[in-house]
Image (tube, rainbow over all chains, first blue to last red; front, top):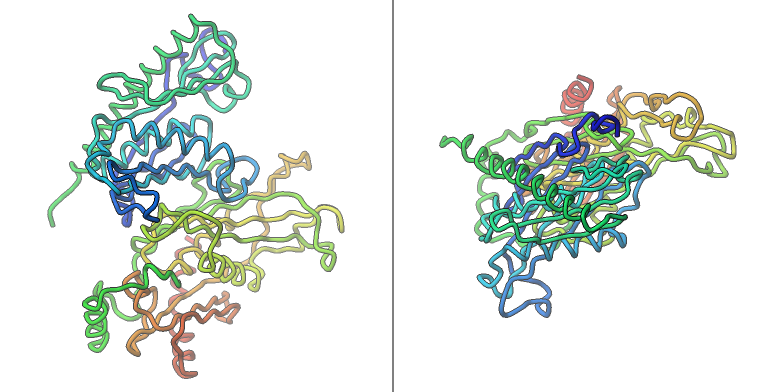
Amino acid sequence: MKDGIRIDGRKPDELRPIKIEAGVLYRADGSCYLEWGGNKIMAAVYGPREAMPRHIQDPTKAIVNARYNMVPFSVEDRKRPGPDRRSVEISKVTSEALEGVIFTELFPRATIDVCIEVLDAEAGTRCAGITAAAVALADAGIPMRDLPVACAAGKVDGTVVLDLTSDEDKEGDADLPIAIAPRTEEILLMQMDGHMTPAEFDEAVELAIKGCREVSKLQREALMNKYKTFEVE
Amino acid sequence: MEIPEVKRVSAVKRDYLARLAKEGKRPDGREPDEYRPIKIEKNILRNAEGSARVRIGNTMVMAGVKADIGEPYPDSPEEGAMSTSAELPPIASPEFESGPPKPDAIELARVVDRGIRESGYIDMSKLCIEPGEKVWIVFIDLHVLDYDGNLFDACSLAASAALQNAVLPYEKFDLGENKPLPVTSPPISCTFVKYEDFIVVDPSLDEEQIAQARFTVALDKEGNIRAIQKGLKGTFTIQEIKNIINRAQIHARNIRKLLEE
């Protein structure tokens, strides 16, 4: 951090470049490819479909089952395939965040499966994953109260900044990923680690919400683009 | 690919494909010797030492190469090692489930591994750092993202493309400058399936679902055979296999051109 400019040249309240594309997979009911800084994420949605085995079914509503997975070559040192404790936790909080906006009561005994594959990672993968999953859910036509969106803020060298890079995450003082329902700005997910004063926390939440609003616009554009380019043969 | 769930094909579809086969036609209008469009994108990931995304029609596979330092095998103290794994994650198909690799994924990884290993695509003798102590271990991970048939060829091609531009990260281990992974010429895999005595290349998912037998052959630059895998319950005659290998020669040459572009 030097003269209010960060190591990658961004201002404190600036996002990394983001690219979102909806409907990129053939087999999935809905899908999204997202690049966010150095993150590359593929998300897909299957369902609503019958939940199997039967004993996991809920007779009153659908289950939302998100699976966050990092591929072995997505990180510096090869990660062994399969879920570790970190990805199990992220899968759980992601499922809960998405369930918050889905009209699950419309699909009793069903499951809505959300697959999030991190192909290349550079800090902020859970926010990128939720953002991609939301677009994939909309692409799959899942009825939702709102289109969830996620973004992180943090603290580096005593300054509150938006959307940390991996160096800032490692060297920084705090990281605060949040997901919101942008229409009402209700919080769907919030995690934090590090050290912030209550005043810094307030500032960080406000900044993260501002980031979410920007990303939300890109999500909507991506969904509209899919249908803009659709031509009848 | 033996996936019990996918195997349940409706009688209507089965009859339809069988009727087309009798007329020598395929469900998507291709000739028996026609691949779907192949698209190869190389070096698209930052954290992988080498990477590639390959599409064959709607099938999409991502391959990533990682290199680590380890001990050589006692019987080859001056040679590096390689390991190939494949994942069929639930993102790629409604029938795939998460969990440890099932027999299909293991067969897939082993067939891809065999083609690369037996063609000597990676020059193992140049992967030695300290004889008997330290060598490079090359990990090839295949991640299927969209499954519409013919994973054998898509994965093999993705692995070859990812290895082609891979870098050995000497700097990461303070061993000097990074070097390109020493490779020779890649194996090219061609897969055929047989249903109703109709033998077609590059099966789509529909065709795989009703296939009685499957045949994969990996050819080197000279057109010599480096690996073979026959799969599924059905049988081939010797003559059929000879024909398949002849047909594969032409496909392998075309695909090799695409890969070297």
